[in-house]
Image 1: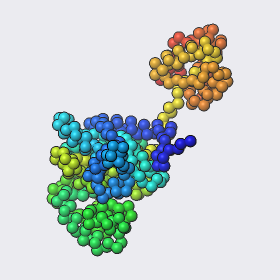
Image 2: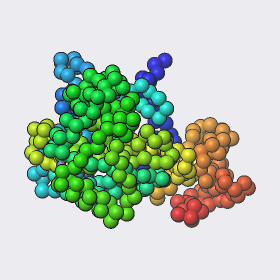
Image 3: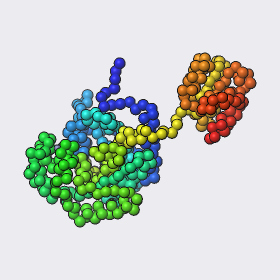
Image 4: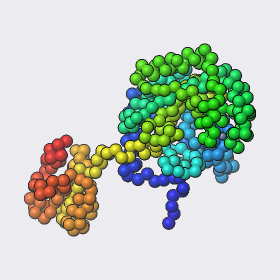
Length: 415
Ligand SMILES: [Zn+2]
Ligand SMILES: [Zn+2]
């Protein structure tokens, strides 16, 4: 007996169905906003993530599934989607297609975190990236699309927190101020932070251990006039889009590439530490990865977490509408033809094994959740008919001719 790996799980029904519904809601909303799907590989060169996500981030430093493959190549399972999208954008000159570079992706991400409730080492993210538009309208559109998507999926009580991390210019000055502050309280920092503040002082603000306390006390970034204007316009447009948001100046994001607008979406249903989705602008990333100057914005949503929020909501019934039962080999052939005809008419249909006893087949029919059992016994076979037995209303049974059965069943199902 070989079990699955720790932190990796099988998605069984009905949870697998919940995932599919969240993904379907996402695809529908992406369509409304002009986003197209990009499917990126799960395995990339390790340096892609070191260079983009950032070598001093927890994700890359501690959690990435990185290894040397049989050919001696340094590779890594993707811990997030943005680096792959940016690589694809550059590799295929997607800025030259003449269409907006608005992409979404849906897929598994891999991080070797300590497994805990609701956290997995393989988890599904839905993400969106809009590359090539520097305007606040792109930020506001991206955030409002995320909120619509969560609503569409059935998540309630969402709240958006936003902040601006400024541009390289505002950050340069802030880096020194923050570094001074952190040196002053070095003894209160955790071990990893102490060793990385000189390389990346901002990282400490996002540290899971001392970040929350530090972000409260640390000096705040002051935005340059251009960044302040961008942030102001973004907020105004969020208001126009009807998105409720709160500015949280302590909000920093754990990745190196963010500039200007960053945001998180939380719901009242989960602990305050856990956002269901988060993202922001990354104006310098594409260029720093060897591409053209292409300012961008995007986000990623944790499908596992959203599914957790929705798991107690009633799911649409995906039981088959009809369950076919047959009394003999000959009746079985008629039954098979009947199933084929029903499905061709869009009526879902299932069966167990026509060679088993009628009683055994009826037990399967009862368990299936179907509305009707359609039974072809010896009498029905002779009459060219089938018995329609309601599995919801006891004692409700009638005969209908096999020819034209799908239309009759449709009427009974009121579809
Ligand atoms: Zn600035
Ligand atoms: Zn720390």
